Length: 105
Image (cartoon, rainbow, N blue to C red; front, side, top):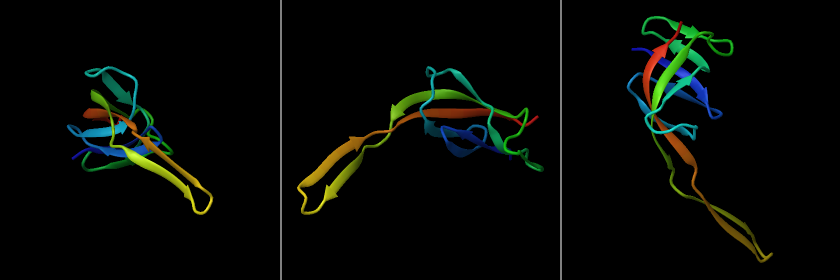
């Protein structure tokens, strides 16, 4: 089974063909094709290829499924006896991507 480790949005993800994952927001419409060129490691099922720091000529192609926003988190700051309390909510944006193909070389 082939897989790859890609870097996007400052994070690393392990991807396989046919897999759907949520990554930090990308530019593009739903249904558009996207290509990840920053492949750190790849395996074709028998051999593992590692990059220094990334594999040259390797790419992972996928399709944007949808854009959305994650669950709300609450940021609460508090200092006791100082009459200081601040409450703020945040929802991080994401892009859902379906991986189509992994090309190592």
